[in-house]
Length: 463
Image (cartoon, rainbow, N blue to C red; front, top):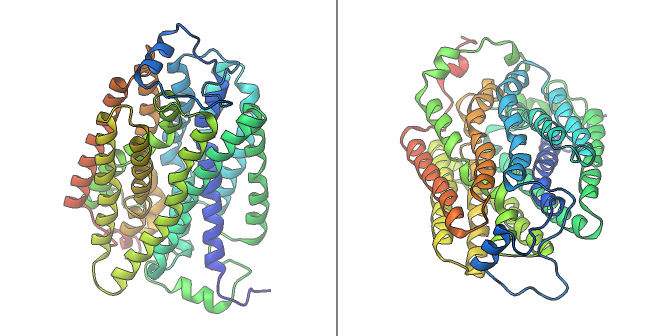
């Protein structure tokens, strides 16, 4: 029986939003949980002396800033626990993008979410042997790599051109919402129950989504059971719609790798993700070691900007759609505006944070602003693959997001190595500058060579 209201494409988009919530939530929970997994620095340790000397804020009575966990890991090992996930993510990105384009996309996404839940449940046991934990984290990143390519493919199948920026913003709002729920709940669970419960609770909930998605949704509107015929026709006849037979089309590799807008996108995806991944993986650590927030305040403040992101991105997407529909700007201009927002203002915020010393309030406000502004990547360059070639969106995402994940792997390991002798603002300043230079260069390249229009090689195989 078809749902009478023509809302199936919107329900499908909501399911994609929730899938993003799950994947991103399971991606970042360890960044908070690790604060309670490792032994606290003891009085007299070089790290403790350096941290307290830099910013010795008064501690509110009854709060605990440093939790004494069971594992005696160095800062380099801690950084690798977080970053090894992204090594798997990087390795799996291109293969998963290819599979997403060539196979049943629904099944790829189901496997991605299901495997994430199962591997998350293994973390508490694996943590007792560091090498085993590295393997589990690597595998989790490997199976998560399909997420963005799959979503890009499904956007081409289910989201009509006139509604693209709005609904893609809502879909990608799941990455922010998942981060909010994950960081906040991780902090609360860690404080009340313990670090193991973080992974047991988070690893169990994704199975509910898997059951609903498997039973009620199809890979494409052409084969969807619960849909009106009028909505089905509206979707499949829309401009730029990705038909099921596109999976059989030959891939125009030469045209792809000689396309200037696509080469610009590769560069932008590589360096325009630095600030986002840096704050995503290292914000709780900075809040704890430099700004000296206790775990509850840390969790609350760390997740606040992602909550704002989930609100602001759909608004920005709606504005971009509205302006294009009224011919105030082109799709290309809209994408370049989003890339500017995600690159330049956050760089300014990081530059100020790097040099204002122990001004906790201003630093916190600017960190929150940085994440909110960086979130525009989801209506900027991370949507651009679908602009250029909806028929090959998964493959393009696999290609561009492979180097685009390098920052997520490099930055946590770099921070860990730099902070071996203690957390100081001078050492953190080096990392801030790396992010600033990367973001600015990404904007320059995209605004010069980027495009938001469908490229001719999207139709080469059809012709």
